Image (cartoon, rainbow, N blue to C red; front, side, top):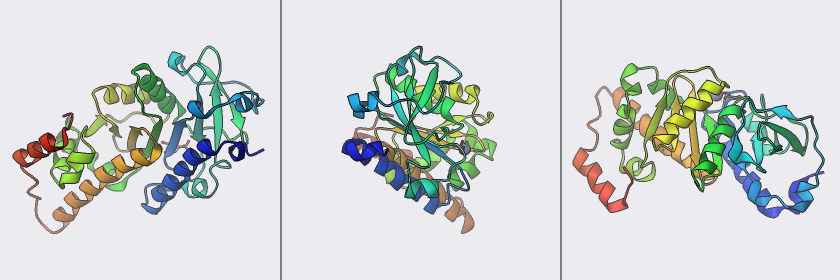
Length: 269
Ligand code: 13P
Ligand code: ZN
């Protein structure tokens, strides 16, 4: 059964996921099964959904996440391609619900598609967001080429070195990514350690964090906004690289010019 037919508001959120999945593929950020998306869909769950039987046995999350009590998520399927998800999000992802105790989940709809291998990071981040009363409901992990390339240099892994350079490339980056880019040192993909380091970085007040030599993890109110954050930051990295390719180090906007934007836009940092 396609549960989205009876749930147009939820359908609209899943449509946004499919739209973003298409952009990720078009940008070259989603090779093979690269990247993953989860969204907290608890607000759209009604009695009809609550009555749905589980399609799988309970599965462990790896950790108890107490703020996820009663929560439901749409998750990209592990090994699934973004380009396929763009066409058919419910065949390449699934809806899960967290079970009492908050350390297990079960798949509820539409098919028993196993969630992304980065589920520990995604769910830990959603738990963290709920704990702090954040309105953010979407999380995105993707492999943006130029941002990942930056992390192969120690210089750009220094705290806020990449943030300052990216902000200085074009005013929009300062204005629309006002929290900059956090850095998470290389850790094994899918690991609980990576999940914990991601939360520590987000807690330093970033919306987008870089997983060294791997990809970015972004959070926002919805998945389109999460995509925009990454897109704006990666565009700035492309401008930097274009200047370097023309044979010069880009001048960058001055601190005074960036401070002016901070005042004009009422930016947090
Ligand atoms: P999944 O296919 O399990 O979502 O993994 C993709 C990925 O990018 C892992 O970091
Ligand atoms: Zn990845």
